[in-house]
Image 1 (spheres, protein in one colour):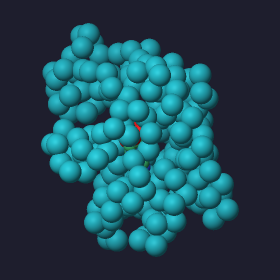
Image 2 (spheres, helix red, strand yellow):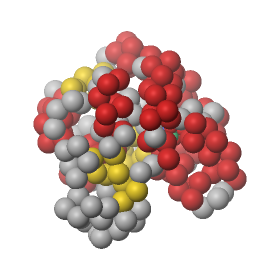
Image 3 (cartoon, rainbow, N blue to C red):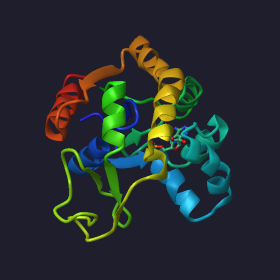
Image 4 (tube, helix red, strand yellow):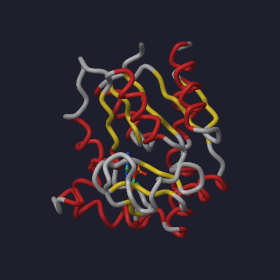
Amino acid sequence: MLKRITLLGPPGAGKGTQAKLLAAKNGLSHLSTGDILRDEVACDTELGRLAKGYMDRGDLVPDTLIIDMIKGRLDEDSGFILDGFPRTVTQAEALEKIILIDVAINIALSREEVIRRLSSRRVCRDCGKIYNLLYNSPKNEGVCDACGGELFQRDDDRREVIENRYDVYIDATAPLINFYKERSLLKNVDGSQPTELVSDQILAALRSS
Ligand code: AMP
């Protein structure tokens, strides 16, 4: 089993959901820069205060902050799944200097589908479980099936912020598809399918790497 994986793809492609599944099945750690930043904001740390404005607008947090934040968290000996990192070529180049990854999985999704999905996404405030009111709604409205926690809509899942996040993805992050292709590390999967099928495709891609 490959141990160092990064998941690429636009916001809403299912990186978080797939990273959690893969991590649980394969004993890998799940590193989501978005989750780490949201924790920093919630704890009102210096980094959280610096990052919040960018996040609220759907812009990227500056590379230097992200690279410093991720550095101490990448362990040579344990496998990991990166979710939402790297997000720029500068971050990918910095990552290469810290540790080499084994494979980059690109979960592809169209702009229309990104907007449709993100505006229907809800997250559990307590355990972080992700729902989608379109195809994976909770049994009781507003309540997490797993832990009974309250479901909420992320501030950056509002329509105008979603559109900016997608544009930022195209400008800053999509170039990573070529970056990893040139290094023969890229695998593509179709993110428009149901979660289990995407998960199967990812496992097949990992087996064939
Ligand atoms: P996510 O949960 O991955 O969609 O991230 C939420 C927000 O956190 C993004 O819209 C960015 O503002 C910020 N963020 C997360 N990861 C990164 C990153 N690698 N580089 C810059 N900003 C990031």
